[in-house]
Image 1 (cartoon, protein in one colour):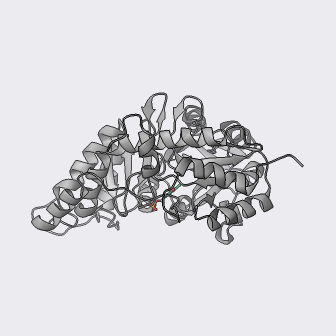
Image 2 (tube, rainbow, N blue to C red; image 1 turned 135 degrees about the vertical axis):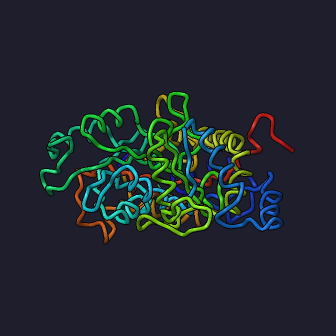
Image 3 (cartoon, rainbow, N blue to C red; image 1 turned 60 degrees about the horizontal axis):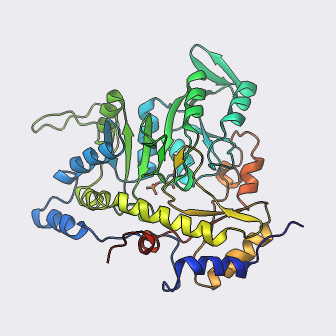
Length: 397
Ligand SMILES: *Cc1c(COP(=O)(O)O)cnc(C)c1O
């Protein structure tokens, strides 16, 4: 048996970082200390709370700027945004979309909403994201290039797209994954719902392709509920705008629509919250990075585990700080999670891998050994922005 720190060692280390913050201490909670009240109040005072209003376009412009993207389209939540993004890059019913099994269920659900089939692929330990080496090997084995498309030799379906997920804010190896997408004629959509504020090669994640963000209440910034697609393509942008606003044709008064579409547009009152939160994003990211380094220090030298650092060449937003055990040990995981819970520290395991959930049990998949092992090795630590703020060099009063 390899040695691993006890649950009380883990509780003590977390306690050294979070100090005397009131228990129970949430895994992640939002923080409103900027213009949230003023902007939301102005929506109510002026009556622009719904699908028309200045904050929607303002939030889209500021978001696109922040992400170095040409365009952003904001929507009611991240799941809808993934759905819309997949439709707009050309995913069709019965196509397969390659995604990790180690992700939140929404990634796969959105693929299903598009009528397509989630096809699960293996991840790697450095980023917890899709493993480029394993993916290349797997596609060489099951993929067949035909008429500019890739056919799954096992199922006979077209593999249309690859959607890597930047888990907990840690960017995947996008350079290599883009190359694979190119070689295999795959559309590339990044599920960057957890990674707003993360960088790769000094640039914001999602800047090169089409990527999806979420502003759910537990993400790094929130609009209550909300999501967005950012893209460099003006064709995809036009298509997104049309499809998410009931495919209404522009006209001064007539209601004419040219296809069955969606009401996915973000309301103005949510966008108001988003504008106020985005103004504080850099500060939030700095706080989270400070929190992550405090956890790294607290856990350094503790046997059998480490806090997962940003993958090489990237800077994570540390949306959730991840404690990673060296080896899978389900009983240690459960005992430790229970002890943390009893101590008022709301830590969480990673999601149950999707191929083990009943609705996805029979879906196509590669070997998922590491995915299954990681599912028993991860504990997400309390990661609210407020825990990192006092650690910043020039902490605000
Ligand atoms: C949050 C999240 C989503 C979905 O976002 P919602 O806004 O909650 O619909 C999708 N994928 C991942 C990986 C997420 O963490």
